[in-house]
Length: 305
Image (spheres, rainbow, N blue to C red):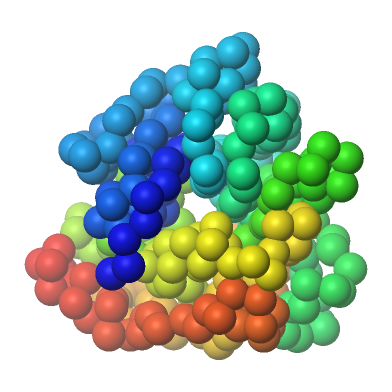
């Protein structure tokens, strides 16, 4: 892998996606600083070659300014994630996902950071029959989380316009892969199914299970972040879909895991997500490589389920 002499800050670097990104940055020879409050991240995920600072982005920004000093890139992956918990607790979510992001951008501006790469979400699209989701189509968030991530994108674009801070926002679609969480309210359907299989429980599926999702491999998401940092074709607040460009139903995912299933009350969620990934290829030269069915097969073997 090509080596880079750079300093990178990964906010949320103890988390699922962030820790995978840190590993690649370290392998590239970068000086890496990890910032995480460990509210959902795991200290064991942090690469030993990275410098770790337990800091909350919602606190005073002076610590952020100090840690950002001399940094080329800030990768902002910290957030309270998931749609359903945000509906139950919108104020706490707003504090972390909106105020926290504003703190990161302001600190990056003060510290003279070259570029901020922001982890956005396909939740900004909400529900639409216009598929695949294209970055130019109207957004229609169906949850506080989706709205907050959209506001984060708009803050990024505004900071590029007003303050000259280079930014780019990557809209992730249903990320899966190594270090995905199996416990707690922030786990996604893949983690829920895995935990239920480990406990010999039925797989619980909301609604009829025909809702379709574009599942994206975490290592592809990491690659997109690296390319977004280095590309000369972005930096003005661009919004770019990062998805697999194909989708499956939750019933089909349950088939991959196998076993009995139980259908429960539906929740507020899009019927289908599907990413148009042409912009990612055009601006970043990025293409997904993940194979979901093969990964689930190997994952089941690793867990012994």
